[in-house]
Amino acid sequence: MYSGLTVQNADRYGAMNAYQHDGVISCFEHQRLSRQDFAHSTDFDYLIEQELPCFGIEIKRGQLSLVVSHYLAKIILPSGLTLEILPKISVETASETHQSPSQLLTATDSTAILVKRKAEIVQARQWVAVMLADISEDNIGKELAALDLAAKPGFYMPSYPTIPSQLASASRTLDKPWYEGLLATIRQALQQAAGILPNRYQTQVHNQPKAQGKINLAAQLKNNWHRPHYLYTEQAVFETDQLLAQFLATAWQQLQKLSAQNVINESSFDQQMPSILQGVMVLPPQSWEGVYQQLKSSTATWGSQLSLVQAQVVTQAIEWGWWILTQGPGAESRQGTEDKSVDQLPVASLMINMNHAFERWVLGKLQSWASQQLANSRLIIQPSFDWLYLKTNFPKSGLESKVVQKLVPDACIMTQEGQISHVLDIKYKSLSAATQVSGADWQQLYSYQQHLNCQNAWLIYPKTKTFTQRLDVFDNLDENRHSNQDGDDSGRITQMSVIPFDPQQGLLLI
Image: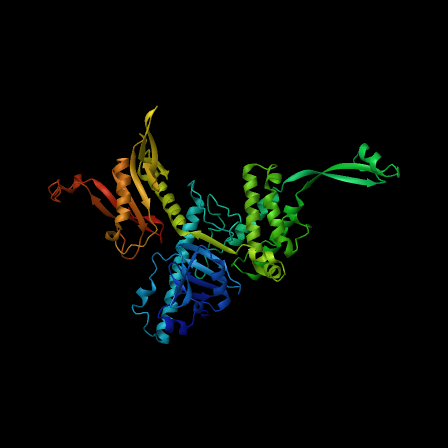
């Protein structure tokens, strides 16, 4: 039933770092992965070599290890297994599971750890699916810039104003990864791009006895003076961009192969290729990179025939197509070639920075809350306010001020009169209790509140088992730390508040 991390691994390390089931290796943020956590040691070596942004590399006791960063990620490994990184918020750490890492565990203990970790993975997948679905439906104009389809430096990394809806349609049932809608996302991108393939007039030149198009007299006299029965003609033909069509057809073929193998748990795949791509010759594996680079460099050529939105659709389809060509059977055959450029190809990965994703998720909920609870108020995302000035004395013009520092809170709520009623700062940190907020976070929030002269200043953190309620700090105390209201709390003015956000339900606990 279980594979990958065995009972012996748990016995040796006292706690489980990774869990493998159905071809997926799952781990959480902040965990440390060693070579022993991988069924195939070449997968660990591969990750060390790639230096992906979702990992830090450290040496502990003379051994290399990967330290997982704040990412929600899916990485296809050389062995064919998929590495899945999940958020750790609301998940017990290894130290909570076993207080003594060096303690040897019995087989029963190890089995209990496996069962517990599986339940934690399912729980994390469920709220990640809720988060992605909410982000895909909000209208926040804040790009999620860390949705990377290529990890190698120098390759185009598209950013999306929202999560593709199909990617967010992950099932919330047992054992279904959060990225199960990935193939559907790629399929839709390829279909949309095929429907708006750029067309242009191509000039075809003919020199043959049969006339096709108009005669080019200058070329006729120059080239056919010795054979007057030949006619030098030119003909304008309206045709699609064949290179782009070939690339999309190749990506579609790769998509079919991955779907047939059920690599990403996508069972319902329409095998019918878009009609405009039917009959188009697919590209050989050794030419994929060259065509991809050529399409990127010729964006101005085919992009001029499309609207801005259409050009974005085609560009994203090219990136999704390139991503899918870096994995699966075709990728293996390409990597088996002698092409030295293979080492420069992007890594097949999907990485979403959880700091960005959590902030975007909370902003969407804040926007809904403000519209429902605060009449005639609106949420402003990342406003910028001049804060610190440098005054310079010029001989002719006198004193001049130059802004040297700005305040940029995550969001503010502004009333209809233009007054800021709330300043908000969102932190993707795990708190053991609301009273454990760092001094730096309090000071940052206090600076925002004092500069903007607003009544409410909120710090928003993920809810944890020990942080479940709002904490308010009041400013109406006298110099002896006594309330000025003489026991009457009705007149208290909230200075700053710590608000929990429940990721399991996607709710602000205000």
